[in-house]
Each structure stands twice: as structure tokens, then as C-alpha cells.
Image (tube, rainbow, N blue to C red; front, top):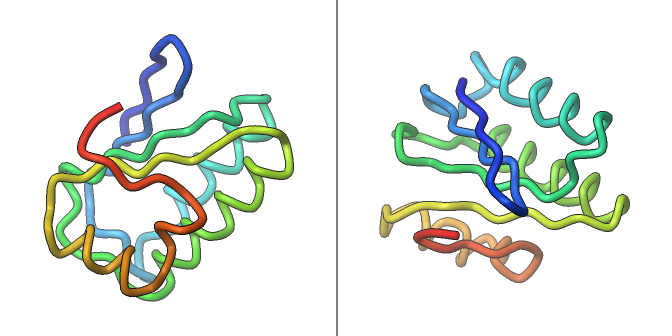
Length: 101
């Protein structure tokens, strides 16, 4: 998993599907960043093919953590199915879903 810093955001780029069987490194990375005070996070889904319900829960937990610390979460995707998923689940009402920063 790659993470880079922009002027405002730390961009996290998971390199595998966000499903229950392999979520722990992704979740831990996000938790570590928040503990380090990096509370403006962008998650780039370019290399993700599938997100299951446990994966969606990690997005909500991350949003809650960064919001509590005064930050914000942005999810970056050009995938129409992911955009639809976040919209149907009403997650786009809690954090921004965009194609780019």
C-alpha cells in the first residue's frame, strides 16, 4: 500500500481488494496516520476491484476518526460502480467521493 503527501492530504493507495480477508493492513495504515495527526486523508481506489461490507465499514470508521480530529476524508475513484455504491449506501453524505483532489 502506497501513501504520498500533497499540500493538504495524505493520499493512501490500496493495491488490492478491500474485503474482509485482507483489510487489516489497510485499516491499520489509516489508524496509524490519524494517530500521527494526519487527519486530511484521501483514499485512491484506482487499484481496487472489490469492496465488501467490511471494507465499507473501514471507510465509515476512518471518516469518524478524522472528523473527530478536525480533518476530512475524500475517496478518489473514476469507477462508476464504486460511485454508485457510495451513493446508494449514502456514504457520500458523510465524506466526499470525487475523481481527483
